[in-house]
Length: 113
Length: 117
Image 1 (tube, rainbow over the protein chains, first blue to last red):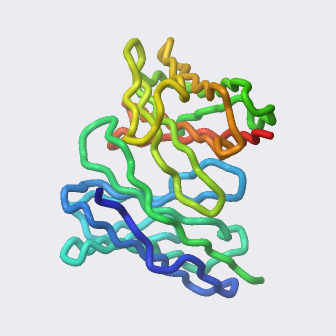
Image 2 (image 1 turned 135 degrees about the vertical axis):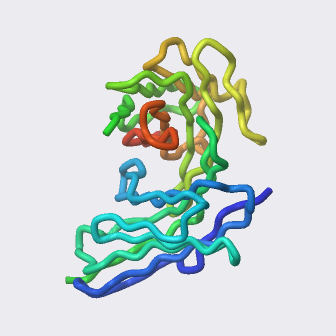
């Protein structure tokens, strides 16, 4: 079946740097994309989402970029902090309620002080 | 935002026993809940969709007779792992979409760590 994948399994950055986490998706029918942060032993935490009719969305210190032409999604974290260390997953779903999420493989972000 | 809880947060059981995991939506009603399984250093894999008042929908490869799901109310879904074996040891996570949020945003529980000895 179709799946969502990631390019980098681990990303190590210095505190204060900007981080970019990438995700490739294969289901062209997906209309809604979400980034989640998961700390060790906890459930995923919503970070930011984007609809397919947008190519960029900004939140607090985070920006999601969507390139539908190449089916690529990225999460940018500005001024990365040690508290940002976690595993980040992208997820996709077709639009309309109660749709199931398909998760990517995840990227571990390690932030050094 | 909406809150989803799980109980227990961790459980250790002997091989062959059954374990029940609860998922509750605390401040909203959820006619649908999702159950995921996550092995170490891996992603979340959807196991089944729990539907209030009707049968759950299981993903391909998930045994419905082994992973019993009951969604008896609008705020509670339970997953029972029957005759658990060591290979069932995993992190089980539930989620529930909130009708009132944008795009039916899914809220995740904190997870339940199951260890089968």
